[in-house]
Image 1 (tube, rainbow, N blue to C red):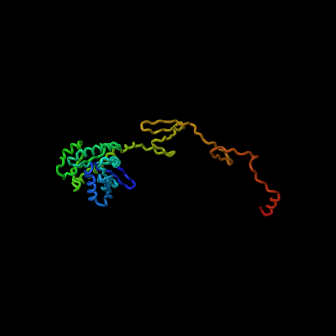
Image 2: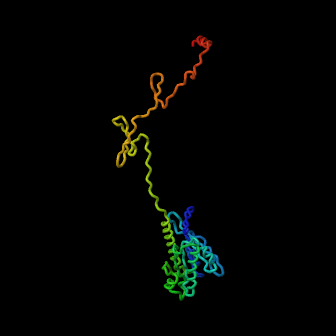
Image 3: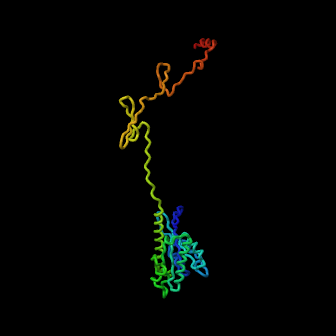
Length: 299
């Protein structure tokens, strides 16, 4: 599956070259690695043994520019061709986004081609990968050798579904980049179609909530008050289709008033009772000495 690294803003796609031993998988990657600019490629890691050229995989990230602001990189792997490295094959296939099957065009290698192709589909199933959903490209390698099988026979034996295929000579680079360009194109198209299929449906548009209306400000949806001829107030509600009238009570509650000294009446929120005379504080009377002293100094 295509992985997206939002921190480094990279889209990483994994492409695996599959095929029998000595069919040209490693030679394909070595040629690509040698032709790609050093700024756009990583180190090529190759582990060789006596039985096969590649024990584990070759790793080659290829930078193909930016897509929607993300740098797209392809990681190219090969699997060991020998059967007893089957566990390693399954490990390399995990998370694969595209497959290139490199077939040997020699007649004596046809049985190995068929066995390797069947093993590839079995390992995909073991890894829980749907083979129908993974882009696949065939390369008929070693076309420069004498007495090679016709392309039509290779197509009929290995590619009955008519997947894209190319003739190749990996040692000289014939068909190498054609194969690589096709598989990268299919991987990007497949990733795009999956992203569209998994995109969530647009949420329903919510109607905006009605804005609050300040008290006393009439509007189209707020009741409007008017005085009736009988002295009572009525409320009319403006509606789209009809107008309804809500009667208001004829008596209006008023807060109790309190009459104070001076003859004027003031409306207060609530009546206030005056404390009894006995409980009120009385001013202190000056003593006789204080009154005489005040009279002397002219008070």
